[in-house]
Image (cartoon, rainbow, N blue to C red; front, top):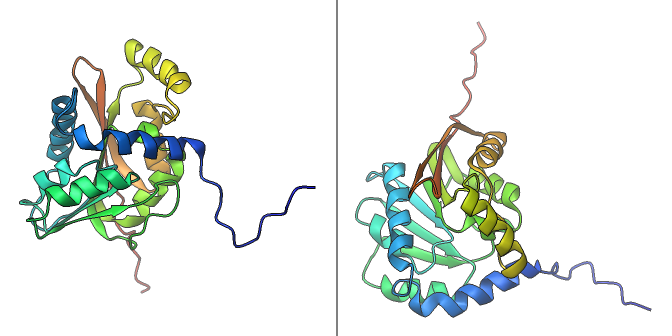
Amino acid sequence: MSATPHPDAAPLEDSRTTASRTHFDRWSSSYESGPGARRLQGFQTAGLAALALNGDDVLLDLGCGTGAAVRQAAPTVRRAVGFDLSPAMIVQARSLATDIANVEFCEGDVSSALPFSDREFTAIVCTTAFHHFPKPRDTIAEMSRVLAPSGRLVIGDFNRRHPAVFAADLAQKRLQPSHFGLRSPAQLMTDLCASGFARASFCTISGRLYAFIRAEKAAWPRTRLDT
């Protein structure tokens, strides 16, 4: 006879989430220096540029890794926050940013509610991480919740509409336990619009291998005054 789970017991973690944590913990020490690091940093720089950050912005980097984008944005914004599943990545991120006063890093799982207040951020960036998220629509809904009206969002990831990327995506789903799957720019824009975003658009770089999806959180609806 199997035991009945206690009603207050924590839900079982998705196996892909566990695999992601293990994968990125192992990668943390060479994340900014190993093979492919320069290319990843280039994607982060392009994602930040698409947000057109300013001194009033409060930035969230979802899937921040060792915090390179957070450190890069820090001189431009009022506050920058990095969020990542991997404890080892967060340790590295905090170590590399010890002298930067307006940054902070949080460890957590994007599969559940983000540990931030409603409308806390004015800009969100997420580069080369979204294909690891097991519940993409739920994560987008949380992005919408923590983003202020008229705030900007940029998601960068490999472009599933490119034939080579499409084939690699299918292979990675079978070979890499942490790989949930790429979403096409059209799928992402549809999901964003369903969660309160507007003005969704995309562009591609690197021979169309990589795509950036940009959207804005819809402004507060205008109320009509009674006359």
